[in-house]
Image (cartoon, rainbow, N blue to C red; front, side, top):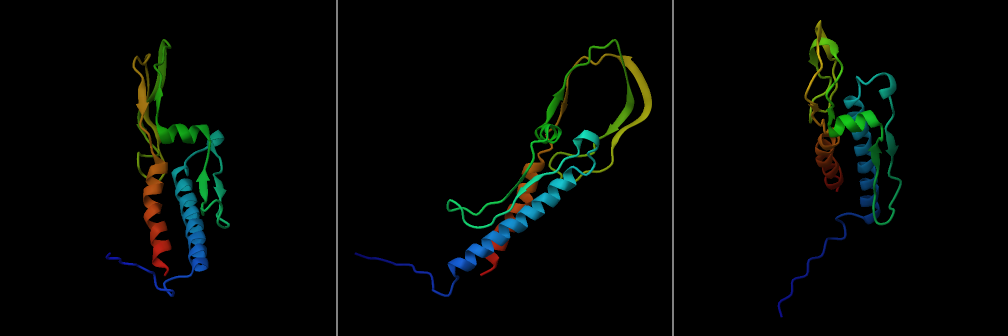
Length: 156
């Protein structure tokens, strides 16, 4: 029989040090994620103002170290996932001629925008309008996941 045994050196890392490094990396990533989520809602106003729920890691639970940032705010979830504006069946519609979106799909930012240009009055809009999913959650995860692994694996 041929047998190869691979054993990590005793001085590679201590388990306690690895757990503490992981907890700190999770919490740093939660903080960075919160900053990014707040950037994505910077131009929300009125009833759309809300706070994100933040859960920090405190130790190992069920063999996991985890933290989270999230919201169930209806407006934010709809914008993140995309939605359809149904056709308007009024006799007349009044609206501005142009519109600049405050957010863009896959971009973790929010800038000034909204309607602009002269007011127009038209007959009702026939077809539905699709608002594309912004996918803030995916963009933020894609940005922060590599940073998390670099923090955990880079501190040995």
